[in-house]
Image (cartoon, rainbow, N blue to C red; front, side, top):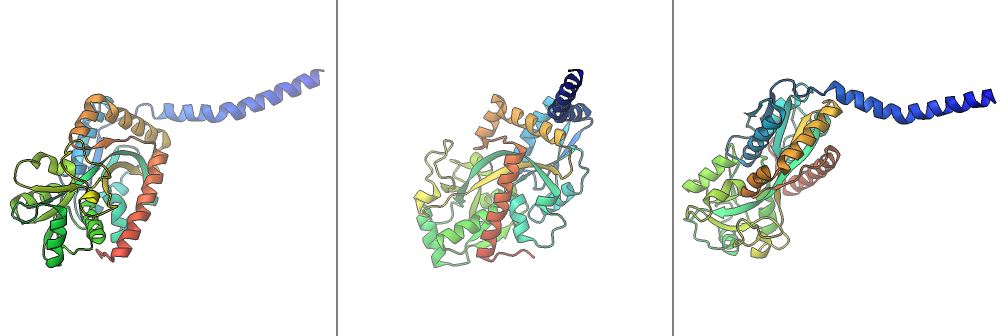
Length: 332
């Protein structure tokens, strides 16, 4: 009887340790990083000020600064289709004090540049998908078209002559327009700039005649007479510009394209810190006043889990690699 009691007690203790051990370890790990962030946080945006990534990054940085009591500093590092800033982030310390906020460019560039010094899958951990938004196809008022069908007809009569602006080689605006060219069967002349903001300025000045860019960059100019908007890239019309048809209904059946913005950290960042950043980011962007700021830019907030974003990012890397191969686009 005493031996049986001892064996039962020992068995219970073993089971308890197996059940409670992992939970205790997780709790201990979280406690070890409970003072995060312990200093100001650097948020690298690998595109120039004025574009969608910059707008999203600054909204999130301001919200997290208020929540954490530590300043989140936006550091714009544009160049080579966002690869310059992304490479800097990849080499940063994996302690949670360097964040990368980028557009879909982070998934597009690996398909375009084969000599990158980083590998997105190997060198980064996805934190969360912050938000996504449709793009607007717009032309300069001097261009004698009033619809997408007319633009397609004009481009078909002048192959490779109509200049379209982008935020740079490998940017979301570049590949989004290449996707449209492929779907519509037209050829446009690519004129790259260093940001979506500069590309928008080029359209406003007439330096470029066509632009497919995120709604945040174009929205302030809708109705100004300085641009002509021909359609939105989403599957449904945007509530911010319900008068604009979708590109699919305007002449390119089945076309759908959205720009997304995500947050990543260098690989090796401790799991509890990744969870803290994701949780606080999701909480911040879902707050009514912050959500309203995003909505005003045509953005739909997300805030999914690190695992969900990592899966989504993997799918995007595969999708854009297939498109780049099919369109035979090369940057190097």
